[in-house]
Image (cartoon, rainbow, N blue to C red):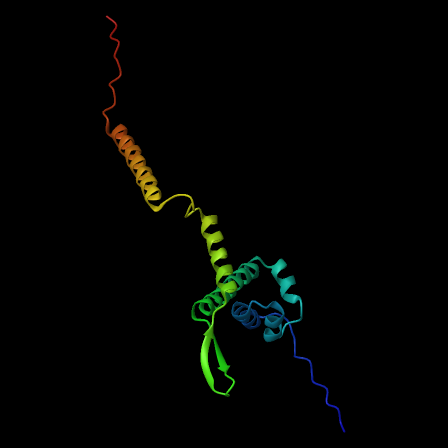
Length: 166
């Protein structure tokens, strides 16, 4: 019996094509090690490249944001639509149903609430009517300030007093 050793995946230097493959896979998976394998670059080299190239670092961050957005959307879809489950009763009869994870839904809601609060978009203690009134008041104040500035700019300049020496 002959034992055949699997060859390690060919890894090489970074190139534009390998960088693109790495970033595409990173955006799809959010997994650096797997992305390095797909791009066929040495393990750990992406971290070094990220510290050495500002352009690569920015592309990496964009790819990771995209990856996490995909993950969040998949989790959101699962929380809303549930997960398909096949139930088998005692008589062996099967029926399809869906399970919904309350834990997943609550975690997503908490994260959404934190994100909204971080932007200052909503104050939980302020009613919608109060927020609207505050916004309208801010707009009125801005308009008054703009009108005052325009009026000051259009006002005729006072003529300098002349002192005629006789």
